[in-house]
Length: 622
Image (cartoon, rainbow, N blue to C red; front, side, top):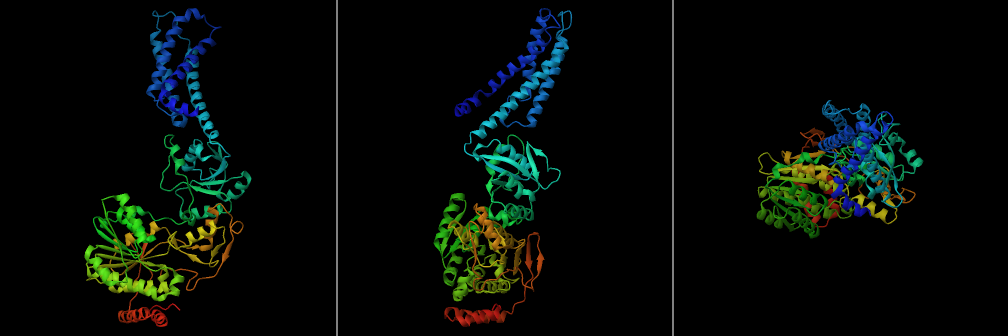
């Protein structure tokens, strides 16, 4: 029956509404005369009554039509629509008085309209039409909620501002979500102990745990899209004390409380991600629209990895004419080509190249064929524990692979070369970190004011959900029922999203002035243990109760704390307040070149002890 009505109503909505109004106008007018039955003789006023009725109906319909009362969707009507209705009714009454006063002048008619008719009929017409529309709106929303079926989940909203108001409006008309809003919280004292749309603002954020217990809340909806990272972390830590499911309103949507836009907001409700719980102020990617990429040929090494894939996406979005995706593993670049071809079609030339950066001749032929204007060097062996067991491979791939790519860029006139580095290169305690620090030294050494190629480096921390990072590992362990294995209770790391990381790389390439190391303001570091507990709670489970957490000890070469700068470097500001440069350290070029020769001999001669001694002499780490 509901489906039949939904098909029927849009087509005949306006005639039906006008028919209802006709009945209401008629009832209002004649009721005012009925009240006068004992005071006047109706027979003497019959002509005036009927002529006045015609004027009354025509004027009210005209006023309502001009005011758009038959264009509005009354199921979504709010204060503005009802204000227009009252204004239209007031205008109609004024016009009715003027028209009848002029029309019923003696000797044209023997009697006038009683003043009571003006007052009562106008008031009843306005009141009855508003009542019917309000009742229809309430009934429609009530039926929608009942039609959702099943037991409704009790919801607490964090934030009683404009976004919270819009969501309360929208959820009342969204049966698909099957939510019952019980209360809201807000840290603004002026909003507390009050109501918004009959929903009580029951306290502040700190009161969430007791409100959850008191009302049996199952879902907490974060309606604070413009909160700072610090505020989000505080709110998340309080919500994490409950077993509720967390939902959010994405930051990119600017909600309004207008009736036409409110229903669409519910489609924007999403699960809270671990990125939200980390509480970092995300870098605004819109600032990094790299115009210098437009029409350029870009070569990306390690293009099948997490960073490399995002570099490909953003290079395409920023207008690169040709993207050379280079990787030794074909699966990633094959999938990336399918994605970019689907999104951009023939607008961009996408060239996947399977090659090993260790092979100097192969790289030389690739650079000679494609003449890239810009190179992003993201290829590297990065897993700390694996590189501790195979330092020869780390040196071959990370150090000599970087030398090969950088030399090819220099020899073939590449305009910019960007090395993707890591915070593990700062005061390293492992082979991976040392090799990346040596890569930085090599790139810095190749930078020259007279060279055609500008060399720069970008240093950042861990990328959330990248290949081999802790988040996918923790998720798999949670899915298996635990335990979640954390190396140490106190271990902390800097984290960023892959979009932020790549945006930094893009901005660094644009600002490069040869030999600079760019560093992102990454906010506060996060405990890996906190990260594990957040992920467990996001899965709807309780840490230590539903999913155990084990501490297995640090991996070989692993540090408790990561750093972004050495003691000698210090930070220098750039035109972007979120990006800094590290002050360059003087390098002994002779010692660097001689040590690289020793490393080459030791790595390809499988002399592990000599290789480690050479690395330690160049960058002490043991």
